[in-house]
Image (tube, rainbow, N blue to C red; front, side, top):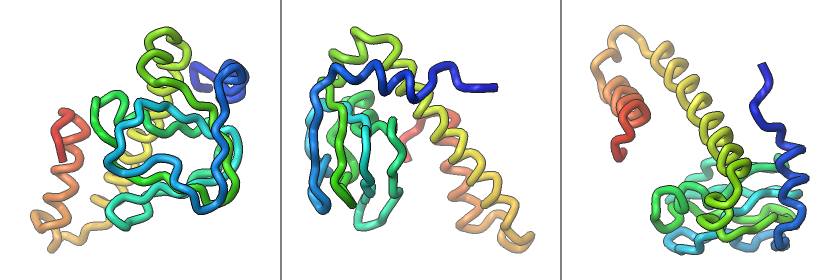
Length: 155
């Protein structure tokens, strides 16, 4: 089954938005900042870093940044840094999502994809635990993450 909304179609719909260009090494979004921006990668590559831990390296057009801070009404919780020259479509997130249900659906699809991937990782992590590790620190951590995903609890 294919997704409800195609990335190429979404990128085409974003073509009227302003563009931001970031050189390699520049900070696209900074931890603690409250920008209200929703950024969609047009081209390039970035890394997402939180507390000095690289969470992801992203180079796929259509990747979305700033959505968690926007949807949760918080400051950005990670740095997004350009690894190479990178171009983004940029929108005032709240206004854009409220006025554009297609964009809101796209962001929901991106988040659902991430959630599905995390669920797969949790299953794999649990399956790798040895019987002696059941009930241990890692097992409880997996339970806490699963509960947070299931109930929306803060982690």
